[in-house]
Amino acid sequence: MSHPSDTPGAGAVTWPDTLRREQCAQWLAPLAERHGLLPETLRPASADASFRRYLRIDTRVPGTSRIVMDAPPDKEDCAPFVRVQALMQEAGLQVPEVLDWNRAHGFLLLSDLGRQTVIERLDPADPHAAAPWYREATQVLLRWQQASRPGVLPPYDAALLHRELALFPEWYVARHRQVVLSDAQQQVLRAAFERIVAENLQAPSVYVHRDFMMRNLMAPALGTGVSPLGVLDFQDAVYGPITYDVASLLRDAFISWDEDFVLDITVRYWEQARKAGLLGAASASGWGDDFGAFYRSVEWMGLQRHLKVAGIFARLGLRDGKAKYLQDTPRFIGYIRATARRYRELAPLARLIDQIEGDAAPVGYAFGRM
Image (cartoon, rainbow, N blue to C red):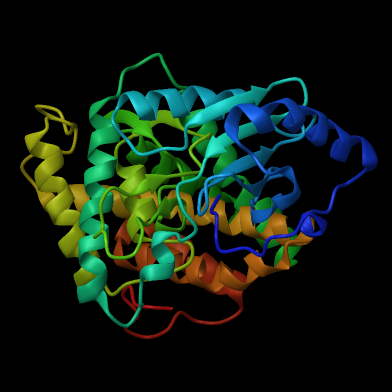
């Protein structure tokens, strides 16, 4: 979810049918006076990987606008978004304010956090300029994690981790690559998945955004520094491994950094998480005293995410007609190879990835910018 620059004009909004358009118009009509909206300015703000989309609408105050979330209730449930928004707001995070919710028809009126995501401010060739943005992002993440309470959000448990991993063989391997795995290859994949999930579940549990990356963080207006960052796309939040969101942030779906940069940001995050008591007095891997052990776990958590996202991006391209996502799958194969080749226990997985890709991994590849 992001709200990039847009072009005003009611005609720019395309509706799946007349009924949906009328439902939106009828909902907005009484809100126009209450919130000072200008319905004729409704236009696209951004699309989403899901079936929801975002529209921008101006208000009578020059230069101000609101966001309309269009989430057809037969395809998307707005309730998790509203629930997590309240949790994040309570934690002191900058999130869109829910101004109105038409639950029956799946429309939300939200405050507008701006038109530029942080990733649009980043230059992959200039990590020095990117560092303050990442340091601020980890501060946002720590505030979110420190608000964690068990029993509030769905658990990120073994069953969910395995369901996500299953997307890789189903959508990336079988449908995108059109590779039929032998029994032996399937066993390699099953064994790797068991190892990965077991490693992931050793981590202390906190609130997990589940897609915490620079494309889902909104930059403040130009000239106002790097704080506060707005947080978007949080409706899939769960309660699970503390390693997930930092792995998501630094092994991004859309931008990559050299490992020296990743290590620097990760160790700063680790030091602050340790001081905040988020790593526990004595985790199974002793992360509170050993950054190397923590970094290993972040990499293994990232591996789960990369396998999952490769499957999701293949599904988006093949099932949902969103071919642009397939263009980023090489980045994830690069991440997967880097981690699998680093750890002896994952060597069979590394060889299997080479077989699926039909070539050998680049010699000397460590992390790298794709």
